[in-house]
Image (tube, rainbow, N blue to C red; front, side, top):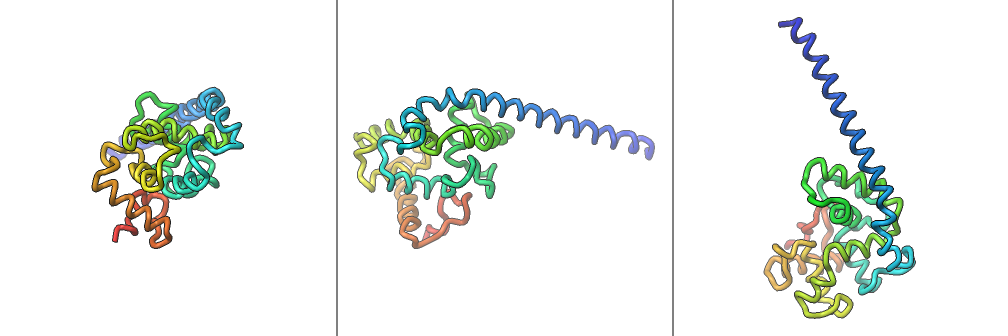
Length: 211
């Protein structure tokens, strides 16, 4: 038994190391491919924002800041990923990667790949305003404004805009007009007014603002 253990343990360790190296190599290739594809994928968003010189169409600077404060507070300073919670929450950049680089995103290894592409491809190779333009586009904010309010995104009033932000890109569960949406709007308003603080980036639902 002792001889068996001496033989099997090194074999297991070698197999684990080989698997780890294989995974690292696979993810490295994925990032390299993403970097080569990124300029083409983001070409229309860079054009729409004059290579990052302009804000995305339809949103004022004040509304952009509201969106960022709720969705991704460190957006202007991170490189694509908020490393305080890289695999449990989603930045604006990671959200864009999920929609533009995956045909059928599944949790697990795809989340690791999403994080790496956000940090090492989209983050360094695209402008922040282009990322915002992509975020608004891939999450369907313009058609959502039309669906829920019968208006263009740019024509929403402040209450309607907050209701759209409060869907957290999941209108199935938090559609404008539902109690869940109204509760999240209430929390967002308290948060923006400085009456409560979020518990770090992972506090998507602003639990400190519940009362």
